[in-house]
Length: 455
Image 1: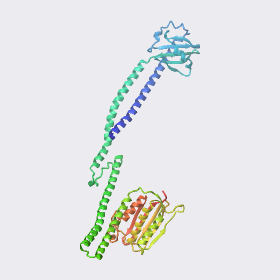
Image 2: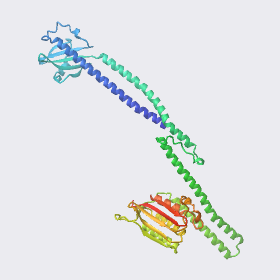
Image 3: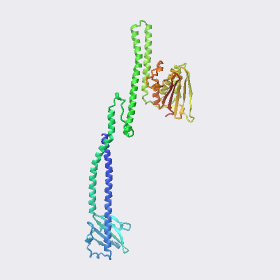
Image 4: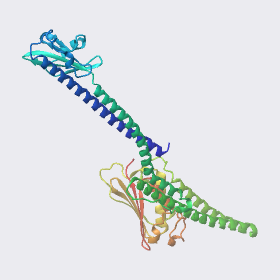
């Protein structure tokens, strides 16, 4: 079902329930009021009749001089008067049944009138005293005028509710259309956004209501998608360039060897050169695969001692760069912690990230590399790797985390620009962050922050 139809249906049902509840209240209030008003009228008629008849001693035979029909003012009126000892003293007609009145005699007290049904008639019984004597008065009748008014009100409410239902549906259709118009406009604008027009944006309207928030969120998503597309294009461009060079060199070497090498020594030199280029291709391919795998956050998290990962990374880098000085120091450590330097994550990935940072520090620096592991807060671990190398220019510092991007002053060194991109992805997968602070010619400091604790 379309959202518009759902809104119309829900709006109609909601307003209809309110309308019916209001109609029910009006009908109930009027019916109760009619009943109470007629009961008061019956009680008044009973009292008036009793006062008229009791101006002199009333006995069962003393009512004959009165024309009882002259006292009747209510349709199907019935008035009965019981005197002391519950004796029936007066009835508006000799043929009236006193069954219901007699049954209500014990309930009639000075506390107030008693309402009941006398067959199809409404009846009331009340207690009165005349000349110090107790009397019980009963009056019954039919409220034809009140029921005609009640039936008229019922008809008015029925017609009004049916007409109101039609108006509610029309109003729901109108308001649903008005409410969904901004969404329809957003949908139309989104349909015009294609892969070649990712720079287009949705109108954000007034910037405050829910539709505007939806448009803002969608524009933010488009910005991320556009950025991802640009990074993908840049990644593919750099990857194809980086792969093309060693593959072309290897192909040229093999073709030259096939055409011109005449002895085994020349062939071995060509094969050695081809093997070196093939190793570069394999290294680059492994780096790209590792970068792709870090996009999967499905690895199992477990408590990992970060200091042990750092020790393994330091040992590996020391073997690769034996001439470099690697200095490890420990920063502030909270006293209340029991498991020091523990994070929740994957030991292999964390070791890879630290290894990349240390490898970069040694690769682009001839001096000592300073490593500090400590706590920024009891909930945050902090690792800094500082070198005194060539540094990175400010305009290039923002791009060093892009896959296959390399700073201009470091392209003469071996590498493919994958290490920092891979490191950032690993750190982000572990809920942390990484930042670089660098000055050209003075060195670079990499700061990694990770959540502390086993979970």
